[in-house]
Length: 389
Image (tube, rainbow, N blue to C red):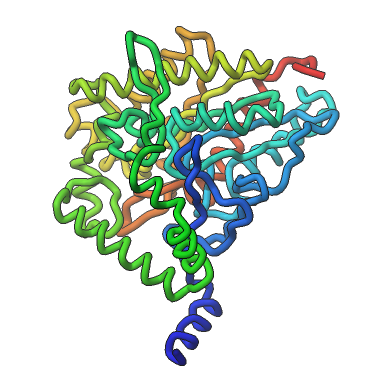
């Protein structure tokens, strides 16, 4: 008991901990747990707080204050941005930068972050329906991570039975909520699971033990699939970078039926989201983010992966979504080429690195640059007169 108490005190004094910020969610599979807080140490180092509405953001009133231009940001772990402080996240940078936009005509910009780690376009659409639209946004900004958002959307590629999907039936999108009947989802809502969750979030020793178990499982998976790009603990990240893995297939035109279906579902989801945002009376903007291989400061790494895949560059998903936006009349802002040029010119990583290779989420500089570029785009696209009173 003394050893455990000393270990617990030591972990608290050094800021080491791995709390769980998530909870089962009947509509979305999982969501951020209101009031959760703690240090994020898996990548970067930041103190994460979740507000009372279950958002990784400060508190925002549901009713929009007068004279406010409100932006709702939808996205996955890049938008949740647990790796950096809240003030450093791109959506905070976006809000600060927009304060100087002359086209706002005196309105105050307010950016609300709805990003949740692991979400694909399907969950982001459902999140807009169930949560984000209540905040009456003027602009809905979808932060689309090409690195895995396409793969997240069909069960055939994602393989996660604890989340909702949309499926194609008679060439129409239909929601699939089979996860609600999953034994694992039901078990996560039992009293025993709730007690385990409470213990995990109270005791750092248990958190470290649980994190060690997660890392061991990840390394066991890597032993079975050594080509998995960017996975934790891979002893040769450059080999992974060159060879790619499942997610690297997004950089080329789909050949397998599962990838073709993934793209069709994704494109239909984007169009559906555009329609529902427009029905709400708001504007819609898709921002395609960057993956670490796309913006590596050494062009050799980008070239190795492109040659391995037989493609001219790593921008196929960005170009495809840009083309969809042109066909379906919604704006798409592509960040990867701009970030690539910056990274190469300054020889600076914009994603967290491991063993000298950028494999992770945006670091502070990546968030800063992305927020400034998105703010310039949003400001330039605003009409000279207010969109809505």
